[in-house]
Length: 280
Length: 309
Image 1 (tube, rainbow over the protein chains, first blue to last red):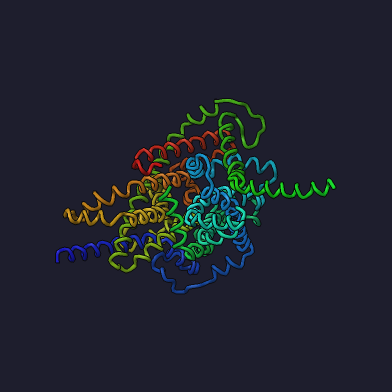
Image 2: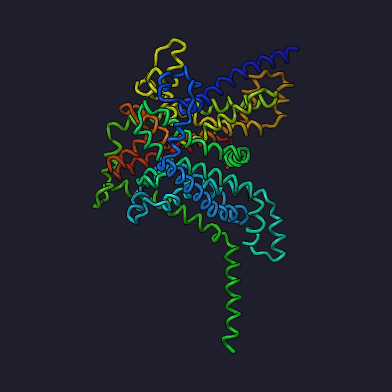
């Protein structure tokens, strides 16, 4: 009897805490949506018009029909997808090797790989900016993609190694007895079986690429090459209170693709990440 | 006769060689080593070289000197920058860790007792986490608009409170930036804490129940000690993430007003790309590296022994 009333009290506190947290996490996004649906007049009415009396899609129309913004979005999509593919090409063989081969001081190599994450992108961008400027690799999507790949590859390798570890070694051996080469094993057995891992690494890298700011901010100054992260930053710098609704719409447009990509594979991505974090 | 005999042997040799290469890890690791070597190791070595020179982003002539090192580390504003960085990083990390653990506990409890909205809370937190840093900064800037119609001030007005200058009052702005950063970062800690909570052996709780422990005692004597390794790993990761945070600050406050929110990463950026002082920027990035590494080492000291591998 006492235990159950205590549990009920606990439930009430849980609900209270959950409500406060839900408001904290959701409020900025609700506000963003609310602003994006308002007309210019209603911007100045604050929370009284949380649900606009006169909702409009004009702001989205303005954003999506401008070739400038469409360009930002396409550039961001291109850069993040290309870098995700490139990242897989680099990380998959390495993950396979770390999982299957006997490598001297393997633990140290893997820890070393992890420690790359301690290095801020800002640190490496300082010299990289100079090199890339000297070989005319700035203002190029290729150069930016290569840097994205380098930034994403340590985590990707780590996650993929975890997935390949889960594929029984005996499959490799059986195939090799049947005359399959190492590469054949990798290509025909390990890759198809690690599809969930590949999918989550792909999405994680796409989201990371979509969110990138520093690298393209430094390497790209031409408006028609900019990805959305830089585009929206520059755009926000030119706006004032009277055009908040358009900025809100632009911001929402830049955020939604990342959210959709994440929600599409939420469980898979989370399990891939926590496996890494808990082991790490 | 001879050429005929030679050709097949040559072919056999190459297949052998390629098969051998396939069995050696080096071939498989080569792309990774190349990418990391070119884009990480070489630049980092160069940062060391720059730090001991007087190089600028514009000029060419460069000399080996330790003068830059001394000059940069004794800049009068550096103490202020480091203080700002400490407050920003420390508060964000504590906030994210505590909130992340609290939300994870509630989510685990909610799942066990079938409370409504558990999934909604988790997903909402995760959505905040996926929002790109720049966009997050812009969103919070709109929310923290100092005018009476801002997203927070108009709520305050409902309760009859005066508008707060979230981003222009130097005494408040740091907390505004910290709140925005906690908003974005908490979900990561929540995910790590959730996985760690799920991994605790239920037998431990049963034993605690047998001993008549109340829920607070169970939390302090079972949950927290079992989470120790996960908390330490999480602290390392979020401390480094926060130290390197740059995009969310530049789009929210740009470091201002004055230098009130100019964290070390932003200061380094400004030194290199606004003042073109490459050598000083290199010194500052070394400082960032040293801080990250010493913090990581410091945290590993607290890792339980078996997890230290």
